[in-house]
Image (cartoon, rainbow, N blue to C red):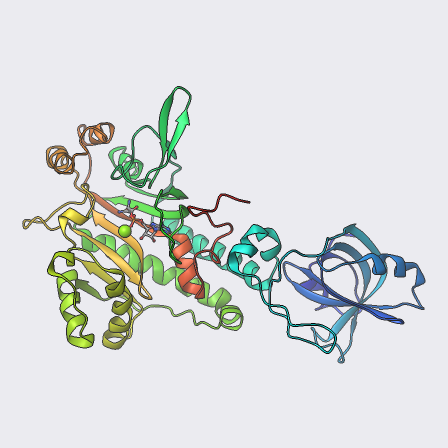
Length: 444
Ligand code: 4AD
Ligand code: MG
């Protein structure tokens, strides 16, 4: 018999089915045994009357929580069964894999008369056994939601004539600034892990591909121990040609995210609310925009927030967080574009206006940066000068070549997929990734 998903099986009482999954729960008493079987689609109770089915008793008594089994049986409607109002009466149970006692507690277990309460293991312990941790409904939903997010963005861009590219992650020179880059041995010389696909996205513009995006790994050798930094994350990057200004880039991003959140809300809004207690809000267009300088003024007026004049070329972490409160109060919005960063704080490849201010932005969602974007400098001489000012001309020599043989005006941005997942589901970054990487974390 072909394998049937549990979610489909419970919809068809009377049906004979073949189910496979993990033992989620197990109660074995003298006359009856109750298993809860779980697969990626749901859970179902398997009820065994031991006297009627003595041949199954041995298999059942060997089972442990999280063992993997195959069950052939019949779905029976039963109002007394809380889960789905249905149970499976098995005729055969095959044990595929026995699980040892689990080394982590995925959730807190309240005390009973016989047993002490069990605390939930901390996230670092759970990451040690991430594959076991990922078996929970919440974590599987998190991965499904992330899939829907990336898929919605990909579909949106394909319909807008973007093509998807795959750029090298092993590179000969540090990509953005030289700092924060991982060096790796590359035969008899050194190579680096790409800090962003930035240079290759722009090479694609020089190649006349006009509109490109890439979803891929991004490496950052930052010793940050926050709930939103990781040393390896998934970047959703895009770049497109013949823009009129940075406004076109911001508009593209706002439309892309509104589409993505609409899709996610439709497909998973309800389940996200149940599992994570948080609402998926589809943003209205356009997103609010404010210049950094004005934002500091507003934050001071509204909340008495003050920073040193010298720090005002960049967004402080506190200002980032406060800006969420401000944008909600002022616009009833969760997103805020911040423009007008200081040239000394921004990458050399951002195009600058007549006052030398980079024509770029950060997008803040729920008080956390999810994107940096900009119109790029595509004029070779200007770009070279900006690289020289930051002492990078030697490192980026190969990149400057892209602009010598004709290059359209262009711009783009990079979105952190893990950050977005984390913000959407109200998690920390460690919880919002398949497998976290940090300064102290290279395993499993
Ligand atoms: O702001 P970043 O560093 O910008 C760039 O990489 C540019 N090349 C993008 C561009 O096209 N101008 O990184 C882009 C995004 C951030 O806004 C954030 O969402 C995410 O990547 N990000 C991180 N996510 C997790 N851990 C880290 N250490 C991150 N660093 C950046
Ligand atoms: Mg940034």
